[in-house]
Amino acid sequence: MRILLVEDEPSIADFVQRGLSEEGYAVDIATDGEEGLQWPSVAEFDVIILDVMLPVLDGMQVCSALRDRGVRTPVLMLTAKDAIEDRVRGLDSGADDYLVKPFAFSELLARIRALSRRHPVMQGTSLQTGDLAMDSTTREVSRAGLLINLTAKEYAILEYLMRHPNQVLTRTMIAEHVWNYDFDNASNVIDVHIRNLRRKIDAGSGATLIQTVRGAGYRLRRGREDRP
Picture (cartoon, rainbow, N blue to C red):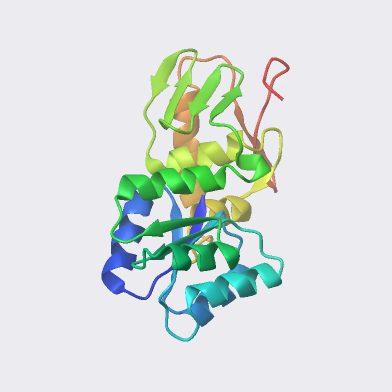
């Protein structure tokens, strides 16, 4: 999942970015409202975390402008203001949720998960492909009932594949969804992660689920018994 964080306070931006990165999210940062308004035209995001008190343009102006442009990405507003009027203004500007500073990081994660599920592709917390199962709430992955230990990036790639079964996902699509703008897509990092995923998922199994589509990318094969 790729997230845009629009926050001008370095300590908060660094804290949130590090925490989300440790959870496997790809995070791009904008430090003022104008930059935050430009990012969605450069890349596609699953959630936007938007501070209200920003230089150049405030968060409410940014959110309203994004909605006017037709950007429907879920927006979570962060602010030190806790007055009812400020919350109402934020929601009226097009925000989907509102979190007052200081906040517990666990609550931020829960709200991000809730917002991401509003997208049709991201709906549902239990995913199943053959005997491969994933719970996106607990982040547990198992095959034939046996738990599989994955790194944060391996989990993010697998979730992306499981939410798009039988679809060919190019390396660029995977990079843009799982990594941030600074990622070097010319490297073989994605291939290495896919190789490690296959080793962990297919160990002791007679069926390979992640297929390589030569010249295109990767596809997670879905069997007849899988859920629609």
